[in-house]
Length: 335
Image 1 (cartoon, rainbow, N blue to C red):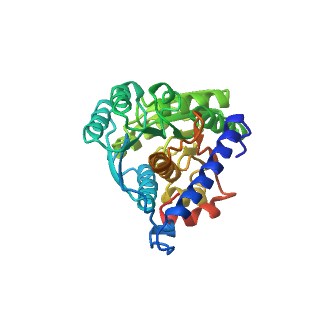
Image 2: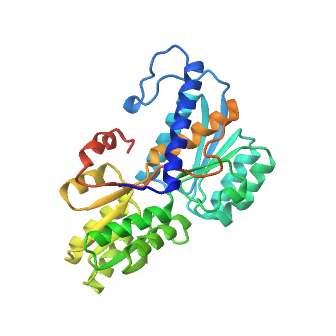
Image 3: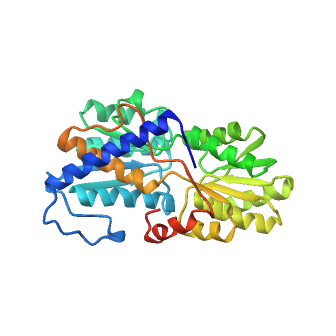
């Protein structure tokens, strides 16, 4: 999709500058010149810069394909940058904060975190900053990271992406929309659905489901469709939820169309077959990669990225018009 906002244009320039800096540093420090064999051939060597330990703490539930992509991006950057990556996650804000504090106590060199529930994370981030540990945020917390003393943010603007999805719904002729939230209280997801409503300009109802229990997700969506046959579009906020919604619509005998945020390999097939109309891509692999790579740049050269503005990794639409160009990367496990 086209996103001609000033913020998006600035983010594009920032990403280009960051890529140039990355290439320059890698050219100076890569050893041997021979590519290392990794999934998808993403690495071109390993930096001979000092080995640092970076903790990545997210709110990603185990087994979620979206978070698998984030972790793979982070691991790809870590392998290239000679980083010892310590990944941990917890869906609950207080527990995620404990993981952040554990990383601070273990004296990691740097920290990459998600801020889905920023109030719960404030104490842990404050401890890290006070200890002189550089922190970057990604994926969630675009409205909170600057006030916390975090050095950079990588992700999409959820309000902008939600509004884009809402406008797409309007152009698709939707009349009654349900926006499905799989993690109640997650500021990114709440903002995304608010953006959908603003962009659509019509009736949008939020439906909370338990994203860690897929049979429950499917049953809840099925019941909603059976209860209200006038629902003609479902918007899900993750690929696994979209695939559950496909089954729910079939079970309920509903003709509701489905659009979603985020992708995985299965969703590629669902878009190709027309079971899912489109996906809003925020490039999770890139988010994980940039979070780790930016910390490598800071630790080795005191570079910061973004000029205290978020570096946007999305949104962009994936649909039948461009799905074939994405499919090969989805099979590699990087999109």
